[in-house]
Image (cartoon, rainbow, N blue to C red; front, side, top):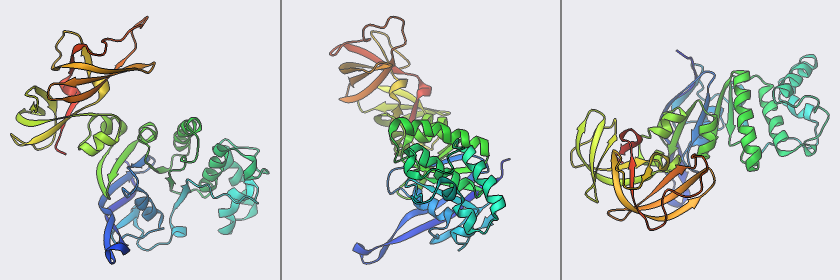
Length: 368
């Protein structure tokens, strides 16, 4: 069993709201979380969800109102940031423009009083880790944005932290460079072997890089799991809606057999989907199914099927997106891959009547 690198135990962080006469609101609301040693872990959620506040409490920049933060089993209490075995990389690189790359990376070691004999090989090692050997004498303005980000990483890694905290470090980069840096960061994390805790609001970024993801909203921790688990088996509507594209079809529970639930939709159509939640007969629920899990078949019924009419078609190269209006005026999106040899036309045209279907295992019944 993997050792626990970081643990948040019933952590609450409240801030006063001046416009409400000092009434406090919980930016982080009773969060319990364990992050394994050596994993790439992402805190994911929209702005204001509590992910950055959680990271700042691990770093020591904020102290919990209640609860405790542990790093490798040691309670941090009021331990200041400089005494914690962590380093933080921010979106703003905060490099000293008047110092060379060597001196920027060496700065933290110099502040700790590390000898010059030790500083040089450690700085060179850190720059080699981020693939910038030979850049020691340059100034930050002589580097690209991606290279400056690597210097910020080297400056954090040179201190040999037990945990590296990254607060949206790629946010200032253009899309192409950002995607390149995502892969480089993941490779770097595997090479150095330390725990990375990464804050992002970018769902694709979290899915691409993470061993596990924690999805947060309004200060609460909603779901923790690996990328496929979070995407394929969301435990609530927010997670299903926030990560990726999802169709939501409303109905009421009719019956249940194991983890398969029969749902009567508002249109009167019956479908079956999976759920591991406690449900009651007659309870209002939502059936969530990803567009790529739905398929169009002209005149052919699939396990869960609806007859609908195509209202819009968008060809985007790798696949074609169809908007289909179902009985009950429910509009769903269907994404079909253009993987047939010699693809030249869509499966249906606008205005066509089609059958839209999906497998039982492709849909989840969600309570909210």
